[in-house]
Amino acid sequence: MKFVVVGGTGFIGSKVVAKLQAAGHEVVAAAPNNGVNSVTGEGLDRAMAGTHAVLDVTNSPTFEPQAILDFFRTSTANLLDAEKKANVQHHVVLSIVGTEKLPDNAYFKGKAAQEDLVKAAGVPYTIVHATQFMEYLGVIADLGGTEKETHISTGNVQVIAADDLAEALVGVLTGSPSNAIVQVAGPERAPMSEVVARYLKAKGDARTVKADPDALYFGSHLKADTLVPAGEVLLGKTRFDQWISTQS
Image (cartoon, rainbow, N blue to C red; front, side, top):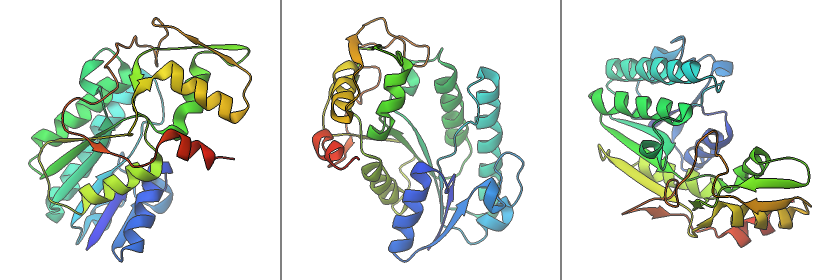
């Protein structure tokens, strides 16, 4: 079968493309540098021709609030229009656990708008809500400070290894559409401050982590359960200690 991965040259997208190709599928890694632009529409009709399913792992190139909203609305609408013309059978989009819990956060607001478009388009779909990547912990640490001390939220996380997420996305993409949300998370739940502290220690980073209930996460206060799944969830197999032992 033919699959299109939009954002297929990025961090997660490239992992999904490699796994699909290894399984013998035809895959288009759609990205502007490959002549496929979901914002302008360039190359979309050509990429979608004969495609069974599409995975959208695109990301806004800016964190300016209106630009985030414009990006997700325009990109998603263009993708869905092209998919309808090509009779694509399954649209999968990667989103975030907790999207509905932070309506005032500009990025989460953009993702919620994206999800609404997907639900209303008439193309069979699956929305994948994933937790934060283990590979993203350094960025989270830097949000709270970059010198001697970093203030990190005490809200819980279930960080997932990127390879586990890619494996889950392949499973969803090659399966039947659920017309619903599927949650994917790491196997361990702990306060974000604790996980970041473990990460910095393993990396030999001398910064002290201050566990701070009022610390912001991309401008938003977190409750204990904001970023963790509730109900049925697909769990990655890689535990944090296993993952960090493989990092140089």
